[in-house]
Length: 388
Image (cartoon, rainbow, N blue to C red):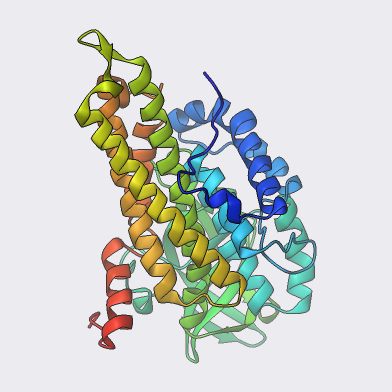
């Protein structure tokens, strides 16, 4: 079978620079040659392919748009293109890179001291150190303002107590960007593996994002020095700014998952025969394929414009929320439609749509549910917040 050539019905590729095309081709080859041959086994085992992390770093895919010591410093559009190609492989792969870059390296680069940046950014970019982002708690998902994790001053240190749940990269991380409530408000801390009282637990039994490390962070009176606090991270706005960077990558990434589902369904429909001819010749199958292509093309347009705006310094939360909301729902619909076209074959791991479908059930929930992003956009256009 011919290799994946991409989905570009509206010739968006014509708007890309030579550098952007080169980045896309590099990531596409990595996914085809290095990731796809191993993803089925890792999905079955519930593990992330750690052996590929150094290669991700050497290719400049970790914190690709971060500007700082040892960081690639690529454009926002190129970061989006990278996410799209990574998630064509699996949402777990894009999630790993997204957390490492947007949720760990980005706050260090934007809220951290020069010493923190010099210490952590080069190794995080190279993949020799792994990070995670501790915001979500068992009782506080969509409402992070209700967080119960506390940090109390004790001389020149802070005593951290609480826990975080549903944390990507939790059990493989060397450092966690942790958000806690203090007497002065919400603050961000760099908590290192090995600090006394800090532990992580694996979340077992996932149906979704199985090729991803998901866990719990536990802080039992962990002593964190003042030098490990992110001084520029003031208030709840700081972690929400981080999430906006990550949601931007999600909006791009899921288009890759949808494109893979469409490409798989199109190829299958051309080869699968029923009633003496390929099922691609049937009107209902063509209708499904056209619907998928139409929605993917619309989502590509959103990403292209969002990326160009970001590169101009325009990256407001409602714009990202609209794209995250639309594109994830679109990708999940495409995965389900592709599974339908594949029939019984669609429920096996021989084909990717079933895996994408399971993964996207998580992606539509994490980093802002579909409903929360609806309300963010609703507040922007009406001027009336409907959260409470």
